[in-house]
Length: 142
Image (cartoon, rainbow, N blue to C red; front, side, top):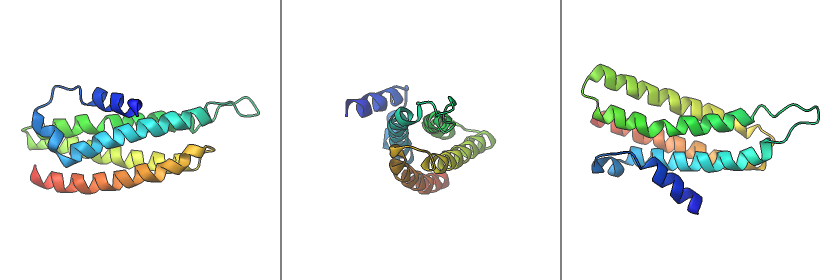
């Protein structure tokens, strides 16, 4: 449990106006970061061993991808929320769309991996679906 708390504190250490923490889409992004980091840590333990032929499991790279992509969700929300120019705001929103699509795709890839942790990936995909809905409603308010 301490791991989850320290991750959430790391993520929220940005100098943010207080209203960001109340945005449901921002809260869901934080949940996704915490969940993806935890799943990645679990998967890496299974995927870090070398195959019989001495090669590494290629799926291990997707674990880093889900962490990196999920870590970029909250900053994109902040940037879109603070941006005044509509053209630049739409760029941040497009980036959010790409990040969520890639995250979803990498979850699918990791579900095919040789790890017991793959059972947790449908939970992350479910959170991504909720995030997409929240993002859609939030975009209407911008």
